[in-house]
Every structure is written in C-alpha cells, then in structure tokens.
Image (tube, rainbow, N blue to C red; front, side, top):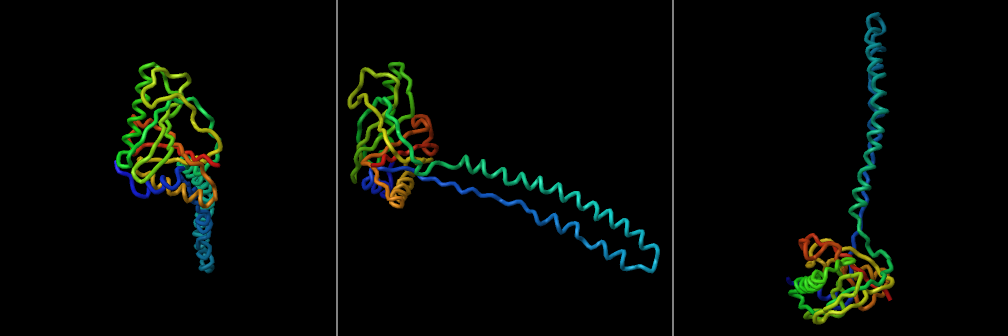
Length: 248
C-alpha cells in the first residue's frame, strides 16, 4: 500500500505526529416571531364597517371567537420550539474528538518487536508485526492488557523503523527474533485522534504539524500510535487510532 509523498515528508521531518478533529456545534434557534402576528389578523374592522344595521353585531361575536382561539396556539408553540435546540448538542458532542489534548502518558509493561518498513508496504508490515505478537501471546494463553501500539523511531525517504508493542500484565517467555520485554513511553504528550485508513493519515500528520507550529510546541523525536480498534479484525477504513506526541 503506497503512502502519499506528503505523508513521507511529514514523518521524515517531524518524527512526531497525530490527528486533529474539531467539532462545530450548530444550534438552530427556534422561531419565536411567527406566533405573534397570527392573533393580530384583521377581524376587528369587520364589525365597525356597518354600524347602520343591527344584523352586523351578529358577525362580531363570530369574529371574536376566532381571535380568542388564536392565543391557544401561541403558548403551545414555545414548548415545541424549546425542544429543538436540545437535540443537536448531544449529536455534535459525540462526533467531537480530542485535538491536541494535553495528557500524561503512564508507562506500561509491553512485549515488543522491532522492525523496519518501506513506505509502499507500511501498513502490511505493521500488521505482520502485530500478528507475530498476537500469536506469541495466544500460544502462552496471555491476554493483552491494553491496545496495540506503534512507536516510530526514525524515518527516511525510503521507509522507517518502528517498535510494535502489546501491553501485558506479566512477563512473556519464548520471545522470538527482535522481540523483547519493555515499557511504553511516558510523560507529557498531546493526544490526537485519527479515523479512517492508514493511507489517509498524511492529512492527520500535516494538521498536527500545523498545530505544533501555531502553538510553538517542541515535540520529542518519536511519536506513538495506539490502535483503539483491533487492526487485525477491523476494516482499514474503519480504524480509530489515538496518536500521541510527546513534548520536550
């Protein structure tokens, strides 16, 4: 799977990246002006137009019930309008993801495997690393104690090096080639969220770079991806990935 040139440049120049998503809460104000003109129709001129005959007062009462009936819709309309703004905020709140949220990462025990990848087959290589770790844990009956992680350690024009890890609650034995026990990164970081395929992460990293520049923040020479959805079982376009940018 070939990643865009922009993605390569961002990783090579930053070695720290993440995802920005902002949510705009749109509230539609309820119409309050329409109930007022309704009762102020023109039934009153009708009785004053024919004062000579005595039959004209008869229509007058028939006009007044119409005007007296109009106030009743007026009070019923505000409650309906009051319910309208209550709906959008929850939907918008659910769609909002952290964008540069300041957090403190805590170190966790992880079983890791080191690797390197070419840009053209980056995601497939990461998946193979996760499969190797998952097979090792399954063989020993050890359940993961957290989400799978990728720590990017270096990049160049042709590819990158990485450490794939899975949090565990105990030491893992029988480690294979390039595998070891270790700890995940810790310390002050910024959290971003990426939703969608790995190929589309160049947009995320570009936005993160802009965010760091605007805020004049210095990132360390690594960044971390936490796979909230299981990359071995989730369609690539449905991935949800937390990206952490450790700060100096």
